[in-house]
Length: 89
Image (tube, rainbow, N blue to C red; front, side, top):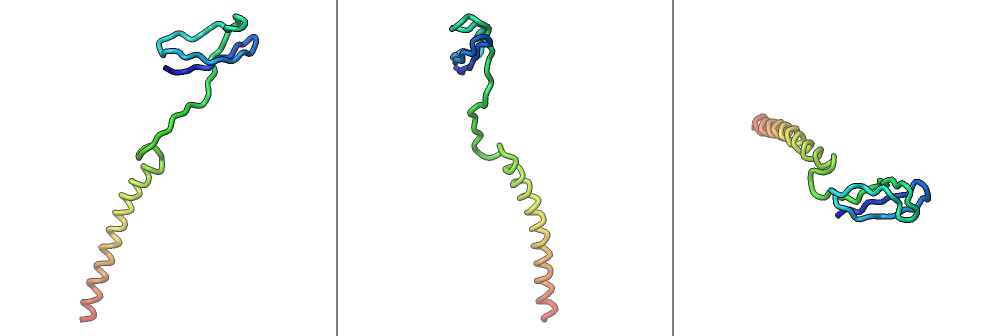
């Protein structure tokens, strides 16, 4: 179950509450009984593996187009190689 952070608008008391997604948000401060608001912060999620980063998609796309350009330069190299022995003969 997720842990939510709350802060009281009146006394400034900050506290955490473990609640289900289905539970309603807390509205009352346990210290003074004042109105509370939910605090939002950064979350601790890490995406590991391929396909999550911009560079992952670029490397496969660049690799694909790089292979195509490498393939054409390879074929032009083979043409010049095959031309070289012909002219030497």
